[in-house]
Length: 256
Image: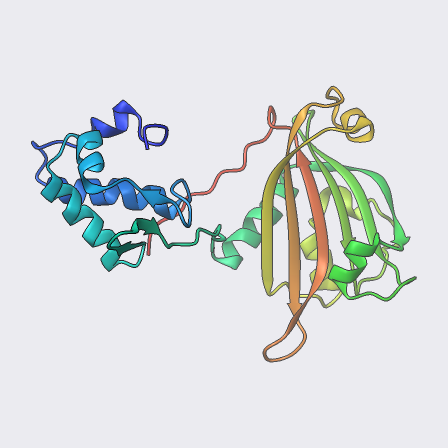
């Protein structure tokens, strides 16, 4: 527990606070259980040790542990001790789709794209499976670099099913892809996004003007369209690699 709770955190428990000490301790432990720091199956210290670690009474420690058990975060058994029974799993962030799509289109309109490659191509197998394509089926492939004020900030690779290739790829230099999709009769009903980090390979490094191996922010976006009253299908698969020196991905969220 000493490896989890620093002296700074322990020092946050205060008798001067209007919140009872047991609830302060309960909240501290609960937060570490919910974020997975205190993992499923971990045995927590006995009440006496917990009280000593946090400089509180044994009664205070017992009350905090009882409240954790009442919320089904831990299980207490005589002779076996107290174990964490909460299974941590990452939760996706839910945000209004309309606002997200407006933000995507706004970014496209306020930057320009250099088209590196485009055409109706056979996607990689994993992308074909996402798009519901059979072996040999093609999708609209676009490879672009976006820049603003002369600074290249993003490397975009996309595959889109159910659309025709435009006669001139230059349409995507300043026109948002979402606008073109709507012209083709495609309407986005659902979007999922995953953020990660990767290092730039030789091709991406050259395209963005960074050193090979430089850290990049990776965003994978899957856009869906409805195929029935209760069904939908991925229609667009996009991977964006951002130069963190030129781009930051920010979210402003409020609690319900």
